Length: 110
Image 1 (cartoon, rainbow, N blue to C red):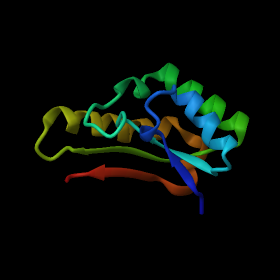
Image 2: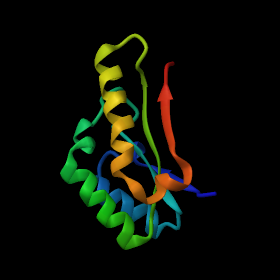
Image 3: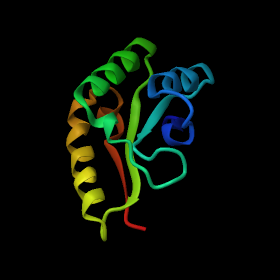
């Protein structure tokens, strides 16, 4: 079991800085959330190949797995969010370190 930090609550840092901060604080991994802050804006840039490559690089460097992927938005009544959720699910295969242990993707229908 991992005590994992949630990336979306730290909106004033880059994703990589957030990973390093949670690692330094003693967390065992990170829930990578597309949600930015506590609002409804989704940062789809996290799904870009170069971001995923950097996340994988830092994850291995720190021995700090991505333990879950999340969107935390209503995808049932929102076609744009539904398309983002599908992209998030597909991106899981590109994040091998950590997800092989948990395979968690949070889908929130609200």
